[in-house]
Amino acid sequence: MGNTVRRERVVRMSVEQPLWRALMAYRVLTLLYAIGVFTTAYERYERPGIAIAYYVVLAGWTLATLPQVSGARRCTKRFLTADLTIALVGILLSPVAGHERAVTGGSTLPSIWTAGAVLAWAIKGGWRWAASASLLIGVANVVQRGSFSRSTLHNVLLVCIASIAIGYVVEVARASERTLARALEIEAATRERERLARDIHDSVLQVLAMVQRRGTALGGEAAELGRMAGEQEIALRTLVAAGLTPASRASEDAALGAVVRAVDEPADGADDGPRDLRPLLAGHAGSDVTFAAPGTPVPLPPAAARELAAAVGAALDNVRRHAGDGAHAWILVEDEPDAVIVTVRDDGPGIPDGRLAQAEGEGRLGVAQSIRGRLRDIGGTAELISVPGQGTEVEMHVPKQPQKK
Image 1 (cartoon, rainbow, N blue to C red):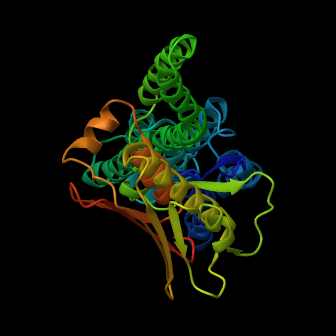
Image 2: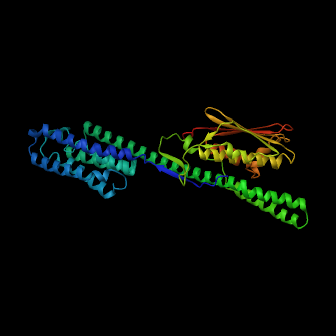
Image 3: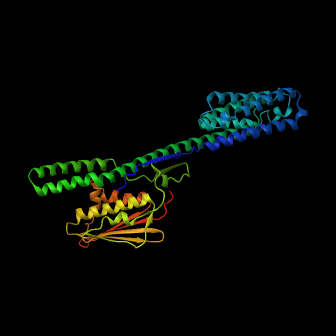
């Protein structure tokens, strides 16, 4: 049984970070657009100096605050307030600069740069913040034009609907990210509990069961010791079973892209080349166990080889415990092009229908965890076939290449 300690490393990627990067580019491009619009209409301004002074401030502010819109942490409420204020001031200064179209329905000084300020509110605080910022922009547009025209309504609604929609999407994405992260944390904890349960089953529980059987057979004080060992076995099985739930498949079922992914890594990084499976299984051969394998090496990744060997050991332990002292077992190793197949068969009485489900409900996790659980963790499968009176056969399939998750 391998004792390699494993750890879970969670790699996280914020789903909203691409929106912040897009907002940075949007602010720069719309700044250039606003300056270009002003340049083409320069002669129409009665007081172009006011517009020039505003654009100098707007350009300096936009370029200097790019780090503030690079992520949610730097984008503070104070910055958002100042950013929106600059947009509002630019809207209200448009008629002061003397451009006739600013009053009759044309572009204001900040032009579509204003939408970037509102979008920052949406990405930072969600749709409610976006609605508040859009409302202020709408009021400023009505004030600077002195009336509520159709074009004003069109512009205000466009900015409002777009920002609210983006704010809502951000809120949903954040909630999904939190849910997925929590699901993966639960899965990692469950996998660790399953690993500990397998180790306990392969060591402590087997020893307690053996002490109980031997003590009962010897009688006297040994019987009392066996009884106590049996009580401790039941208590430990109950404790292990209470802490186990079926392994979560959130990372596979929630197809949300590569938002979050869990990675199993050997703690010592010692697993390099493939390992021959035959020496790991040959030690089980004996008078009551026949071992058959190819004459050439059967290579598997080290972790897969260890887990498969442990699963075979658990299957043989079940044979010794449930098939009786006179039962014989056979281990057959088949080396296929893409997978390794190991079959453990016995000539015992077989398993009655429903017994496996009953055993799992009682906390006896030999098949559920020590065999199927191990195979599942390395991308393999285990199939159990049992006919009452004709023995039991466990067929384990393990792919030679690790399965991508």
